[in-house]
Image (cartoon, rainbow, N blue to C red; front, side, top):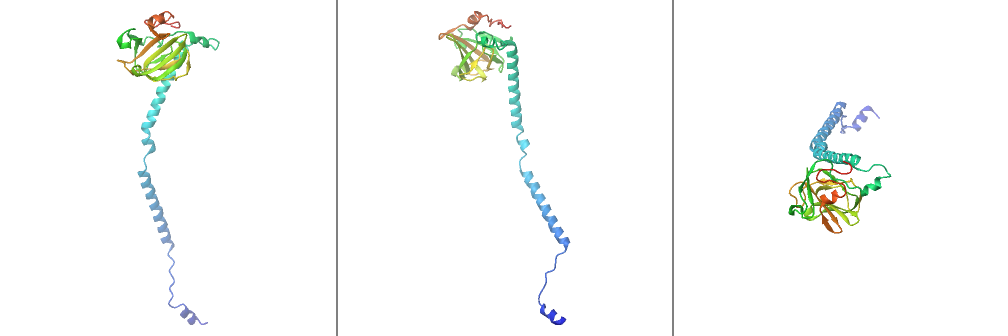
Length: 230
């Protein structure tokens, strides 16, 4: 076939020009830039999780700090008030101790006073002060208890029950066995209370007795903050 006929055969057809490589580069660059802008916009719209959780982290840190202080107070108390040694630890059930260490409390209402619910005494102390089991036994109540607020009741055996009221936070549960000097709760102002205090009652065979006199008979001087370990 002649060259002229070959040209006539393809006459009328148009071949699409191949775009220059520079155009491909421009398109690719535009796509990348657009994707980057979208990514930045999305990141800006998303909340900063660290900033949003700052208050939660602070709260957790605060809670951990408070828990650490209580644990340290408990360990310190145990080191000075608990009977040491595995052979004598069981005997700590029969040891009578002060419900609070040191001289950080005062008897604000005496036995029989109407403001002390008629059946016990109030030991006024700073809110949040730890208080402990004056005698070992079984926790029969650890919850809100009407006018007593948050309350712990311990059955010490032989018809003796110890009642601790007005707490702000409890660290024992019903059915738990405790020894003398074990951490029970923190001083509070819950229930029918006029100030932060521990409302302490001692019942013998169902009858409320004067805690000051009863503890004195067991070598615990509630007024002068002395016990067998002082």
